[in-house]
Image (cartoon, rainbow over all chains, first blue to last red):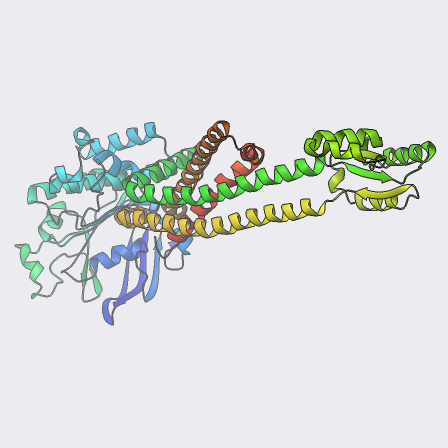
Amino acid sequence: MIEFYGVSKEYHRRRVLKNLSFQIAQGEFVFLTGPSGAGKTTVLKLLYRAETPGAGQILVNGRNVVAMPASRIPELRRTMGIVFQDYKLLPTRTVFENVSFVLKFLGVSLAERRRRAYQVLRLVELHHRVNAFPEELSGGEQQRVALARALVNEPELLVADEPTGNLDHRLAQEMMRLFSQINVRGTTVLVATHDVALIRETGRRCLTLDRGGILEGLVEAALPPQAAWRREGSSAHPVVPEERP
Amino acid sequence: MRRGAALVSLLDEALAGLWRARRMTVVSVLQIAFSLFLVGIFLLAAENLGGVVDALREETAVTVFLRPGTDEAAQADLERRALDSKLVAAVRRVTPEEARRRFARSFSSLASATGTLSANPFPTSVELDLLPGAASSAALRPFLANLTAFPSVEEVQFDVDWVRRLRGVVRLVAVTGAATGFCLALGAAFTIANVVRLTILLHRDEIDILRLVGAPEMLIRGPFLLGGVLQGLLGGLFALGLLGLAFRGVLLFIATTENVLLGVFLVRFLSPTTCGLLVLGGVLAGLFGGTIASRRRHV
């Protein structure tokens, strides 16, 4: 599903990713973790071609993302659902409009948009807030609207950037439960987070970014002891890759 | 079906965008309406003057003055040749007596003067009514030259030069109108471009998100382009409405005024084709403005 081969990326001569290689199979649920500035968001951006790497190849569903012409990028992105760290909800639009406006542009009829929006909003338990505006919602609710929007086009791959960053632990667990449900339905899920405790609780495969490279498997054991974010977890629990659902 | 629904969505988004920036939208629609209104006035003047010129030209008869003593056979031959030319609809013989009566009718104050003359000074003449379109036919000049060459013909009177000069004035009015209108419409197009650009700025977040979730580029920029076209269309229709009102107002004024000359010069509204072209001009100005504003580097 996702293949990175020797990917490097620099920002203003500062190397963020260095010869990064990893693979994620279809239907997997994988965490991408690491300290702030490790390049988690960059990896995700490279995945949906918001950024291009300095070197290396990236394949998504067998398609070379790096060599892809600009005209094909929208098609690539439509196969993905993206949950942004800052939600990126439209403040002047209702929950229903936020969730369904992409479908509107894809020519889906109003009845079908309503049906699909209701389904995903029910999944995230916000079907009773369809007419609310983002500012009327709590942070957790906004996060769930962002998730609903990512899911409404039935993506093959769900990519989430720090989806629990603004949530308390209980809501974060709730969000992880939702991701697991979505994953059970066959959607590949890639979640970038620095919440080590949450990764441990969820018990899924974890890729750890550190110093531009990737460490597979253990969430804490392989990390440098001085990493500040490491202290969030109380003990080093191995996180092993799971079988596909 | 999906494409149709997508187009409806584009239109819906375009209208919503115009509504959000409604003040600027109104300004640009008014500006384009004003520009096209001015163009319309020029066209209205040109079309009506052109109509008058055509009518005058069509109504002008060729008058052939015959030499004194021309016999009946020569007159009949002249009339037959005129009718055979396929330029003449009818011939009318005017005797010296008939000519004198006409003069007396037209110039009543001078009527008594003709009675004091020992002989009738008016020659016999033949009036040729031209067929529709004959006045502008290329065959007319050779035909007139042939008539002049007749031994019995003293003079052929058909002065089309003043009609040509008048037509030149009409053309000048039309060209001036088109040039002024083009400049004004260009200004309006740039206003539309600014309105569309403002709408784009207002929708910056939406555009970013749409792009990130994979909306096709045409569907991202489409509403803005369509917004420009809609503004142009509204401006064109508004201009047409204003022109209609102005025309009715002038007609009312003419009906109450004693100046009959005005009634001769303003008799008809723009033709449906010209109306269509005027609205199309608005649409094109809007399309131009929308295209400038929604170029890739702006959106």
